[in-house]
Length: 300
Image (tube, rainbow, N blue to C red):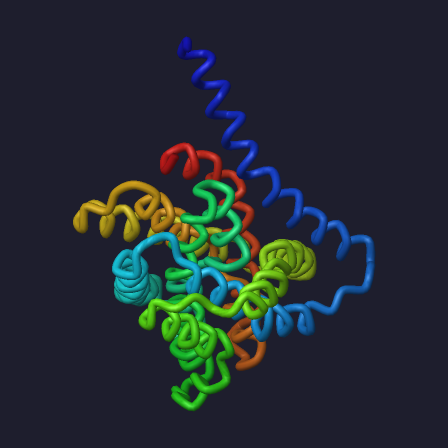
């Protein structure tokens, strides 16, 4: 195969991966712009309470990758969050910006709405299983540490209100015992978990359509910092730890995602300059649509 044919094949593969993400998010964006009714809060509750826990349970309880590898993904994800927090705190201090307002945006990428679909489309079922490990760590940390940063107080009792945690615990029980879930449970969680990725992408689009860009220069700078910092931390960790194969690609993809929309929701709830945080979410996502093909080309 010639160099031109190789390039064409790679472009076709990249388009196959990126197109569903752009189309689903674009449909949500267009739906909102047309003034159609879409209850983002209810849909988000549906995904976080039922869809994502079922997806996590079904994926983890039927692993084809090793438990040790999944644990390694989770550990690296936790290390990445800490690394981004430390580096982000330095950046914000130098820029004289409040960490309570902007640090969560530099710590937590969109490993759910964008990361899971991309990992699945790029690396198949094995990629999704590996990505779930990163997503679980990010979700639990974001709903505890992220919420604590925005609110100014840490509530460990909040862990009891995270359905994803119970789903992971149940899946781990099956994994440790070596048993497979009953067929009815497998079928049910597979069916309910199947709503998660399309709804995540559609909701991402509707959310972006409603957010407004404020303080463009500052927001664009922080958006760029989030993408660069996430990629640099991911690349550093997979290189130092000699991570290879799909795990390397999934980690770089997941940790390089733009700012998670939930950072805006926390900023809105606790009065942490939500307009500016919203702008960072929008601009980092817009920038990622430009950088995503290059990122995928790099990891494939």
